[in-house]
Length: 159
Image (cartoon, rainbow, N blue to C red; front, side, top):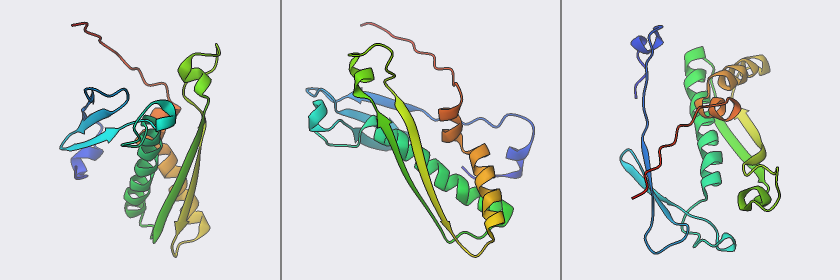
C-alpha cells in the first residue's frame, strides 16, 4: 500500500487483511497460514506436543508488534523529517501455561505483560526522538490492537 494524500482525508480509508489458518492433516499443532500472497507454518515446540516446524502463535504476536513498530517508526520518522539510522526492537512476554491448559481458574491464557525495548540511533536530538516515540505509540496499529478492546466476532460451522 502506498500512502497518498487521499488517505489523509476524514473519510475512512479501510484496508481489510485476510488470513486463512488450516491444521496440517495428520499433525496436532502444525498450522498452515495463508496471508495474502504469503504462506508459512506456525507450530508449537516439542515440549508442548508440536514438531517445532515454525514459530508459535505467541511468537508471531510479538513479531507482529515488533515489525509494526519498526515500520511505524520508519513511516513517521519520514513524515516528521526525523533522521533515523537504525531501529532495533526486542520483545518478550510472560505466559502462564496454567491459563492455556485450564488447570488454574482465573489465570489468563494470554500474556501477563509484554516488554518492548526500542533502540534508536541517528543524528537527531533526544527531544526529536521523544517526539517520534510518542507519535509511534499513538499510531502503531498492532500496539493499538493489544492495548484496546477489539471486538472479535466468531462464526463456527459444524460439518
